[in-house]
Image 1: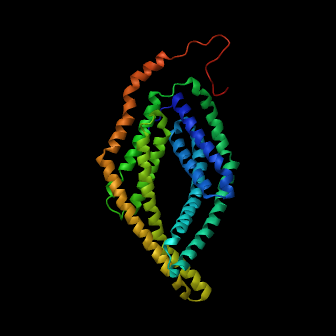
Image 2 (image 1 turned 135 degrees about the horizontal axis):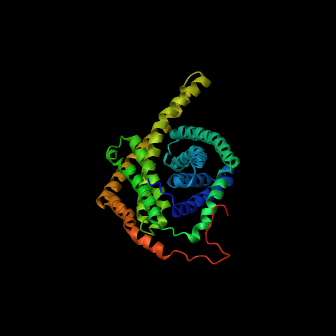
Image 3 (image 1 turned 30 degrees about the vertical axis):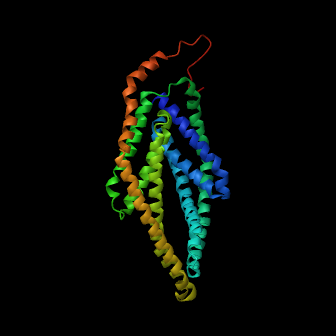
Length: 347
């Protein structure tokens, strides 16, 4: 990835980073109160986008600043991720409960729901501790202060410079290459780890394209939307994989709890029908989602989606001479005496 630092790169980066800082900050109160699962979801997404932006614009920070900010935001993402995953599992369990009308299936599902709620309560303690650390370290405040001088410069800096387009090209190209490296594994549904990694790569590509969307107008939006569809589908497949693996482990854990409490495991029998039925339900859903993923991927290849994306992000590189000429024509006149059009970071 390009490591060229320029005013345009850092001014643009400050705009992106500051937006994600504000998005995270806006959710803190709701996350701490845990009134609605959407607070966790929004803050987690904002923290992911912020981490992506920090990596893209690393050149605008000192090494120490970058490591500190990245570490603090990563810890928030991690703790929110655990809580969010449990929220999603509980919401899914509630949504499918009506599909299991046989009374014999209910005890197992209710027991699973109980344990997940207990885990969610424990996860909230970690969320609160992490947010309190974030506040004590003034991470978001410090990032906003870092961004402020660059944002003040935005009026006097021509943002759409070759250096910024080069950064966009190298960033998007690297993430696209990472995504396509997983394509070889997509034809085998047993490649659970590879499909999970592919989802992560799709997410990273999407966030990188979103960061540079302003440079390409509406032209980048179809690629962002399609990448999000792949990310969502791969996410559904991963969620099903988690359930399929979780249920047998959950049965073993309940077996141990029941055996210790009752001295035998006979009460486990009433839980098994619901748990096994739910696991079968997730396996069936996983299969359907996987087949849909194959169709989506084949259509994208047929339409040369990724080749078209490469054409788009390559195009601005051919405009380097034109942009340089434009900048020369737009150079500001010498400031009149008693005024200053040069903005220093120390002002």
